[in-house]
Amino acid sequence: MLLIPAIDLFAGRVVRLTQGDYQRLEVYHDDPLIVAKQLEEEGAPMLHVVDLEGARAGEPRNFPSVASIVKSVRIPVQVGGGIRTLEVLRRYLDLGVAFPVVGSVVVKDPETFAEMLKVGGERLTVSLDVRDGVLAVSGWTEGTSLRASDLARELHERGVTRFILTDVTRDGTLEGVDGESIRRFIEDSGVSVIVAGGVRGIEDILLLQTIPGVSGVILGKVLYTGRVSFREILERAGGRQC
Picture (tube, rainbow, N blue to C red):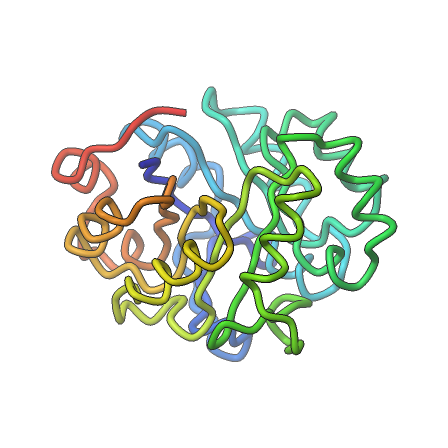
C-alpha cells in the first residue's frame, strides 16, 4: 500500500481545509517547495498536490507552485484541482506530472472527459469525493445525486484504473477513517482505491492495510499538526514504492 503525503495549495501556500470548507482554512507553510523536498527526503514514494483554488475556480490558480515542485523533486507527483479541459490536462502532462487527477469534469462534461481518457490513458486518475456515499463536485462545494460506487464501476468498464476515494465529511478532521464504508465501496464498485480523508495516525494506516482493494492512502493534516512525521509513519507502517 502506497503512503502518499499531500500538499494542498492556496495562494501559493501550503494549507489544509476541514471537511472541504474553504472558510476553515489553515496555513501550515509559506513555501510548498520546502515542504515537498522535506517529504521527499523523509522517504515519500510520491506526492499528492492539490490546487484548492483551482478546484473551486475550475482552472489552475497555483500552476507556478505546482511547476516548481514537479521540476525539483525526483519522485512522481500526482496533481489535481482545476483540470477540466484538454488544454490544461496536456499542460500538466507536458510539465511532467505523473498522474493528473480529475473530478468534476467526469460528471459535468462527459464528452471532454472521454477525450481526456484518450490522452491521459492509465495515468488519468479519477477523484471520487464522497459525502455519505454520494458524489460531491466543484471543490466539494456542490452535491450530486450520483452514487460514487456506481460511477466508479462504470468508469472502470470504460478503462479508468486509478481512483481516489475521499470521505469529505472526515477530511481534515483527524477523526479516523471509516473502514466499513471503504470496504463496502470497494465491494460494490469492484475497483481498487487510494483512500483519503480522516487519517489520524498509524492505527488508521494499519487498518487500511487489512482491506483488500486499498492500494494507497493520502496523508494530509496528520503530517502537519506535529502528531507524527512521514518518516515515522513509513518506519512503523511500511509501504511499497511506486
